[in-house]
Length: 197
Image 1 (tube, rainbow, N blue to C red):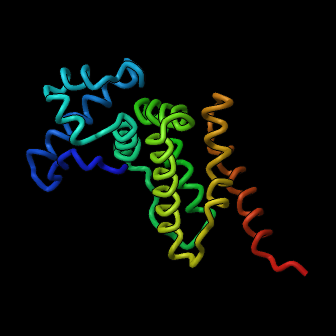
Image 2 (cartoon, helix red, strand yellow):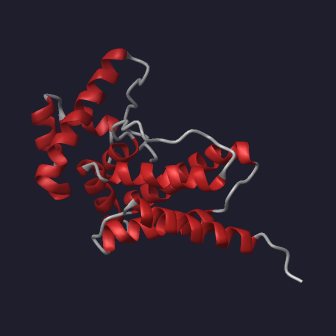
């Protein structure tokens, strides 16, 4: 998120600033599933976190910036995979981690809100792009030991079915579903990388 020039950036290395930021995020995590994105106003958040609205605007100049941090700084569920040589194993572990992450109510609510606002809110659109880039580069870091790096389109083909099942179908993402997605995805990758005669 680009910071407006007239706003003073908080010093993230300052422990007091970091504690305030962490407290506000914790309060926002509690409030968002209860009140929804529209109800998570800076007035309510400032009151509940015992900070000024000016403090909130210094850390998050837009609500999209706040939602972005709620998504990327979700709780550590201990499910994020380690880098590996086997592309299928890494993809399977990554999709299970994605499933765990979006099962957290605040992450799910924030992600849906940012996606819903992206068509009419440039900050939300930028946040979506940044989230996608962050996840794509993170996945490629996991694949480094395999010597394979995947394109943005190939990455979308991996996670797209899982998000469609969760958010559009409102269905369950079982381990069997993830295994099927990864098997199909690996077939697509092999086909794309096979030289055409």
